[in-house]
Image: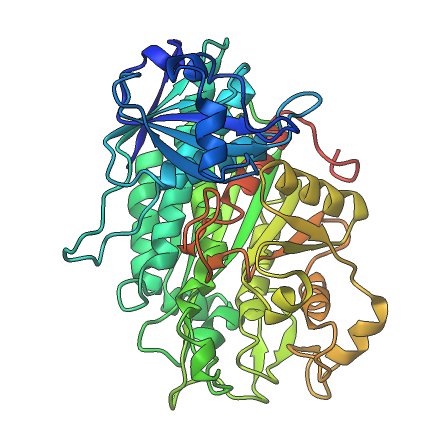
Amino acid sequence: MTTVRINASDAVSTETGALIVGIHTTPDGPRTAPGGEGLDQALDGRLTEILTTMGFTGKAEEVVKIPTFGALPAPVAVAVGLGEVPEGDYDQETLRRAAGAAVRSLAGTPSAALALPARTAAEAAAVALGGLLGAYDFTRYRTGGDRKPPVGEIVVLSGAAGAEEAAERSATVAESVTLVRDLVNTPPSDLWPARFAEIAQEKGAEAGLSVEVWDEVRLKEEGFGGIVGVGQGSVNPPRLVRLAYSHPEASRKVAFVGKGITFDSGGLSLKPSAAMDWMKSDMGGAGAVFGALLAIARLGLPVNAVGYLCLAENMPSGSAQRPSDVLHTYSGKTVEVLDTDAEGRLVLIDGIARAIEDAPDVIIDVATLTGAQIVALGWRTSGVMANDDALREEVVRIAGEQGEGAWGMPLPAELRKGLDSAVADIANLQPERWGSMLAAGIFLREFVPQSVPWAHVDMAGPAFNKGEPHGYTPKGGTGALTRTLVAIAERYAGNGTSERAV
């Protein structure tokens, strides 16, 4: 994995494989941002002329490479756009994306120095995190060819107080996001529920987490009918993993629950083949919970945290659950299965019910739950629903601060009737397709007591980037929501929580 360090030297004297500088767009042409001072002089005052000739304007995430021909210790200068000059502080997401786009363009370069705005510890942290995430590349199954390795080391040029500690935090968080991306990108032939549980046990123990695993026998004995029902059609049986972190100074507890369908064929309600090739990403919610718990432990946050990974493989077979089956879930409620492809909510309700027993101050579940989320909000924005308006808006705000787009969504009362079942307490799907993301949230809410603060994040699109890389986001697994969950834990550690949870 790419490493990061802080160096207080100036841009033009730093020995590195490539020097990255920020450029603003102005009415007078491209202009160097703080951190890149001296570059224009080193290039004999021709920087603006060079950039303009190359068609570079300085718009956000625009990248161009300039050979220095010995004018600098670095053989290449990389100009990356930051957009217009801000009136106040730099937006941290702008810095993260710029750093990520620039570093991503430098595959094959051993080292890169980032002379981007890093005048404060927060700015240095943003630059470091963006650079680390931008360097990601999934190479496990590559056997050769001309694919270049990612940048080996990035150096953030900053003399700000606290910059080194901030960069260390960024490195810890980036390590977790990288792991989640790797898990999402791993084919289901190499990541089935028991294997995911083994990885959680191994890495959880290394981070100091307490890890408990329910196998298929214990799941059935203890009544986890949702997880058992979804997983019973596969030769790879389901698992439930509980990760726990405690801190002696903690006064609050957060619980995270993640959907972990290691492959989703749709079960007997089979998906079309064109919708199936990226269903290895259907465990992205469990991945985010796992990565967040690892980061929380490694950062030593003064908060207690538990995470539940609800793991199953949804496959069609003679033993698979059928439409019209009734499941007896861990909560005690019964669910009629009208569609076996609405399986994520079935594993989540067992995880949520178990998390309630931990008496947390808040429960957040994250899941690649519905295609309707993508229809409503696109590929980059998660939908957030909750049983409390203040909590919902807090999750949206925290996600936004991390650069992980989210939008608050309602839980309309009139949609509840569509989940009525003639034979069970509730059906897992409404007959109408309209508002199905919201109906899924309403279904989950039925399993949470009103006294327990709860939020649900549907991140079906953000978990997997089917398009081209952008900013610090690669093609494939993104590690979405990992950073948001860590930030939520940090907020509870600092007691800066929502009105509902205080």
